[in-house]
Image (tube, rainbow, N blue to C red):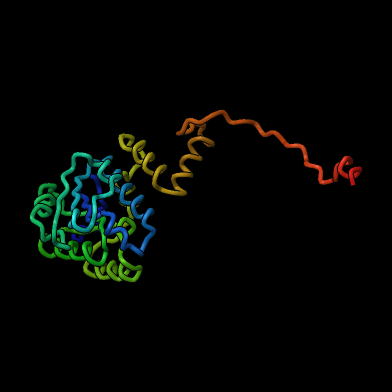
Length: 241
């Protein structure tokens, strides 16, 4: 194969790294809605777990500045070691290099904060010094401004880094809906994290195919049309005047 980037991502050929998904880092993000950002990060993490894709979580200055990694992300990987650093560039920390090497996969899917600093420096260094292919998850990363994020993405693209989205990565891992071993788990992620797509799946399952609703609830009460309220003054009130 002349260009390894033509090979689609699969659960067997890649790994994922989460860089500095911490509250103080998220506070500075202006390129994407921060709740959407966290939604996308957690969705990517859940997808990686479903497909058994090796994951690395690295943090910077947790106690002195950045705060603890999103609990929703840690809940996906409760036993995962958290690789603490001082450097803005994750590649500068030997623990991170060792974790990537242990996974033994040259395609690295990256979700991190901030795009223009930690993502950029790691991606360029890992390509240059480690020979890795980098797939930057654009909508699970964020910069301090839209311009900072966009121009950093452009810089990385010019260097050969591949831009992707979290849902694109998950569906590339799934590849075929005939792969029933992961189908239900992928659909669960879609329904919880994929917005209108997830709403559409719920609609199709329940209305088109007659499946049970996902959530239990009280009885659905039939419509009861209320009698119109009269706007005319009451006779007693008229008589009193």
